[in-house]
Figure 1 (cartoon, rainbow, N blue to C red):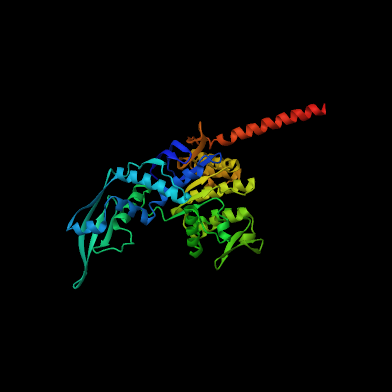
Figure 2 (tube, one colour):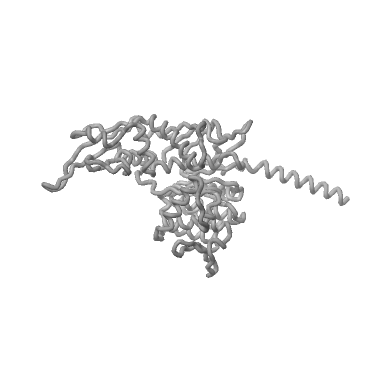
Length: 426
């Protein structure tokens, strides 16, 4: 995956910060610093290439009306040129617009700068040539559009006003090719917001775009059939072990099955309701094509199971998912660090040595995480009421900066209390 860089001038409390999009992004820090904001912002740069309306909107704002330009197309030539800088400016504006939709909030004074990778040329040029196909008396004229890497064939006639422009289809496919190396690299996007469990069991009317997007995802997942995906068997086993059971679906209602007992999902633990949607993703989608934003995957879990959740997230990632994760859990990060260190060992040892080490550590070789694909960010409070995003070095694991002060305070207070209790005993 090629790098998309974002400079945040202002986004909520976040000011003067830089973020680089990666395959797996972890955001930690105190509450209220803006972890969710930046995670949503990063998710936008996966969502936008999949959503047909948004790129249509860009082209409309650029005056690139396919129907108008189609009338000017003769035999062959240049159909459209798109300035990369104009696309970057529009993405910056639309990303903030998208954030406002998710949060149901006006964000008029928020602004960012987007820098697309060098694999995207400064001028994105679409050429065309017209072809006539069919049999005599039943022929159709087609327009064959070319970008740098792709071709798209469209009928030479008007498109429905609600349809996606052929320019938009080709542009977002070309961008995906330039960024991800494959125009089919992304198939789905999912946003899993906090307190999502209630929407699996209650009739909730979403008040924000964030939960409307989650409701859309649930609607899709409810209707899909369970797929036979052998590549995801291990992560499914891990997740079911974490859940001590599984969720099932009867008509439009979910239930929880554990120890051969079926109960309504509404009667299951809050942790089961929160993570149950992960099982649906595993059963019904191909993770290798999914972009997934998960807020606090460890929520409501015992520390032992928070560690198990780190394994699940690692396996999602190793199965090919693009992920944005927010977390408050040092147990989750501790385990994630172990898997990063396991990845470091994998790079240093040959395969047989590595497998021997994994046996001695009771680890699965495919649990290891390659650090080159991971970016960890800490959100810290600045002077005043602002926060700043800090990229953390993960060469020796993700630093526990946000937890260290709390741990030291706790140890210091404990020592003082023990000292006072000792004096009383004397």
